[in-house]
Length: 316
Image 1 (tube, rainbow, N blue to C red):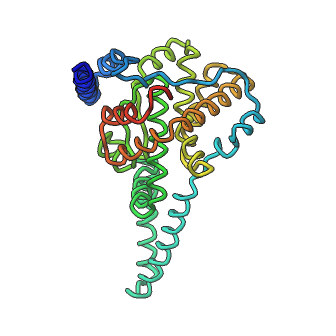
Image 2 (image 1 turned 60 degrees about the vertical axis):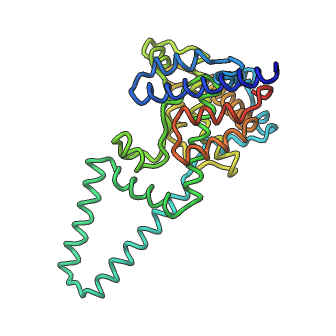
């Protein structure tokens, strides 16, 4: 009888947590980030609540050398120098196909030199219009959509990259607000062009500190790890990173705006790299299951539940 009561109690608590996460989704969708965060914090650390939120074990903060990173299996140069070779290859192939198509059309339709000139000018005008008016957003949208459609490797990499951001943010205590996995999805959800994919966070506390000119070490550490989580995930899975250059640039801009010396900036980045890599290694299963949930378009609350269900209490 006592055992039965325990099961019922646990089941009721789990159901209560799911209902709270549904409320979190509703508050996030309505833009009420403060209430959403308050709901999560009310369950933070409770045995049958949200045990993992902000509960990550982190490495001691000090100046780590590049050699120490290598001893932990981390090549900082490969991790911090992402190059998007997949999209670059797709773009080159499209350019070759466009030129070949133009030549074929010229011969098939027997276009005159004047018609060919007008066609070339028209294409150049459209390209310039996109570049000037939309900062190349339409071209990026087309390229990213083709990448997701025809390259499973590219699609998987983007999903894993964003899952890394989401997981690390949650573990260090920053609530994810939403995510997009493609430029087309970003356009549909946010009305934004020139974005391949991205994760957004409930970051008003950070913005308040930044606007006051005093960012605490705790807050800086959190967002440094979040910024590097995408490239760190790619590095662990593929041995190098392709996406995330903008993440690194933003982190670099942040530490510079805080007046860090080069030595202090290096210290911050190296600690963040090591801490993030170790977090992702420890919770590889959670990241994998989270990526599956995100690829299905699950809500933030559902993704949080996946994380909580995937991590053993003794391994937080």
